[in-house]
Image 1 (cartoon, rainbow, N blue to C red):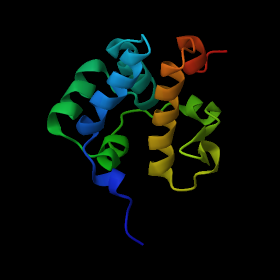
Image 2: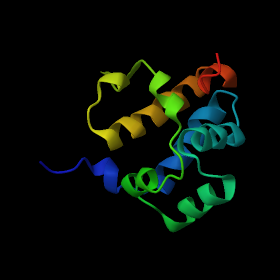
Image 3: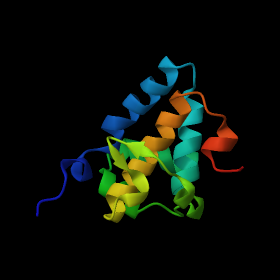
Image 4: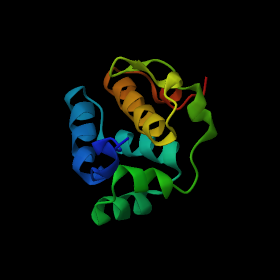
Length: 117
């Protein structure tokens, strides 16, 4: 079975869409970056380097320094699929990020988004 095209899509090509979605709802680029760094373990400079390199989604998550173990607390539906039911690991990580960006755009507090409660 062929890989989903999102795996070979540049993370940098989708990143501005994440930022635009958040900003449209009154959130900031810094908050988007905070969510991404929390999930992946990238520092700000490392994140910017990945964006500059045009790293694809598969590599972006494969090269992540420290995937946050609390991401397993992310539950819910994204694209009509429950994130906790996704079997393929890379797709699950991508959908975790999508879910976090959705929560940010919906106005959840950072503590709730970053699973501190």
